[in-house]
Structure formats: C-alpha cells, structure tokens
Length: 215
Image 1 (spheres, rainbow, N blue to C red):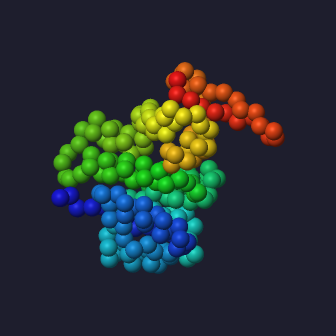
Image 2 (cartoon, helix red, strand yellow):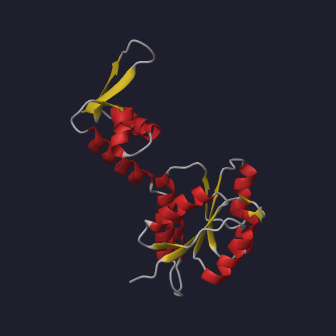
Image 3 (cartoon, rainbow, N blue to C red):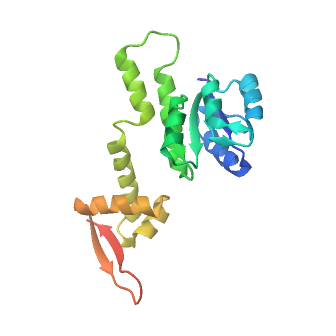
C-alpha cells in the first residue's frame, strides 16, 4: 500500500483550518497533520512531521505566509482572501504550486488535491524524466486540458438531477449538490445545444423564473 502524502494546514482561523483538514482527511491518498495557526508552530511542524504539502494562508498573526513558503523546501498551495495581482504574483514567485482564493467551494480544493496527488505520482522516485514526462506532470497539476472533461462530468450530474421533472436552477443545484451559479452556467450551455428545454414561468412579482426539462 502506498504511503499517504502528509498535508499540513496553516491558518489562524481554527474553523477554516478544521474544514480544510477534514477535506484532506477524506482523500484516500492524503493524511492530514494537526493544523497550526502561526508560523512558529508551522516551522516546528515542518521539522518534526516533514509534510509533503502545505496549505498556507498568505497572512498569519506572526508573519508572512508567502515568505514562509519561499523559505521551506516543501510543496505548497497558498489559500488566501487576497485577490490583488501583486500578492498572487508574489506567491507564485515564492514557489507556490497554486493559489486558491477564499472563500471557495469544497470541490475546488478537492480538485487541486486530486491533481497534486497525480502530479506527485508522475514525478515519484529517483528515475530520470523525459521532457514529455515533465510537461504531462505540469499539465496535470495546473488542470490544463481538463476543462472539457470537467464540464462533461458536471453536465452529467445536472442531467441526472433534472431527470424527467421540470425544475428550476435552484432545485437542480440543490439536488446535484452544486452552487446555483454553476448549475445556471451549465444549464444554459445544455439549452443552447438543445439537450434540454427551457421556458419562463411568470409569477405575480419579480423576474420570471426559468424552468428546465429534459430534451
């Protein structure tokens, strides 16, 4: 059995770090370490537990999470509420493998963890790699070329949730366990391709509601 990759969550909000730890724990190829809330605790954890991956907030009570990523010889994703371009560029220059803006949906972190595991499998061991191996690993890590597969899987989920009923985007989103915005985006694409039908239902107040049925 393959040894799970150890993941250290570094975030000063204990509720957020707990949620992220629980997401890591659900992945069969990952093992969460006890989350830490400061850079001092993180430094001690890296030395004692030797994590394979860190999920690091950009700004921590006792210092700069991005500078910590740069100083540590450990793979890392930066998870931050900062949306300004300079912070994102600085995180990537520091060596972060990715940048995920808070707040985000659970599936977004799950997808990045999945890609990281596949990336590590492709560059495992001490064997010599060819350029094609490196290109493939980087493509997996960034999700390049995976958009069409992801859309297809989401659309299948939406079609299953729709079934034979007529339903609104909110109802379909609730059944599928996805956000309303995501459901609306894919429903619109399915309707444009003629795979589902859409009609407007006019109520007594407010905007008309779109209702969808299987094509």
